[in-house]
Length: 145
Image (tube, rainbow, N blue to C red; front, top):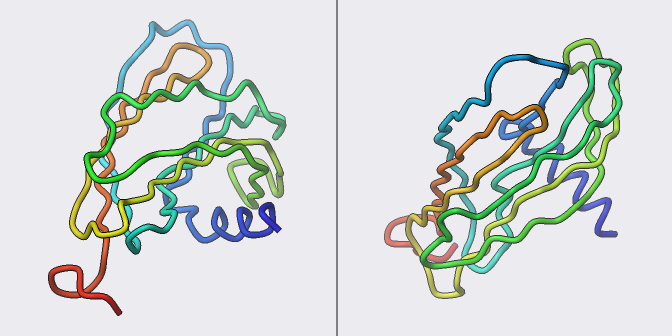
């Protein structure tokens, strides 16, 4: 059941999918900062990131290392491992690879914007700092629907 729900969640959030087509590179390590946003309801899992490593032959490479640099003030972040399916990604017509999926869950009574920062270290030396703003609640002043 979890895998089916996870696949649906991943499929619906491909806009925040982070794919890495790795290859050998002699370039020095580089750090990049990325600003992203997500939204959802209080006390529910909100998907904030998907992290994979897709090789040029459409197989999985070593997954990136993920570290919570700045935790959210009004919630918690958890990482789950799952299988991610994608179609028509670069030269890959269809693939299914393992990946890490990051979720944010707010405190039950929180409504507003919470911010967290995740560091993602990809194989080959590239590091990405992801500053993620999570909007929790809906309607004016977090009015419940």
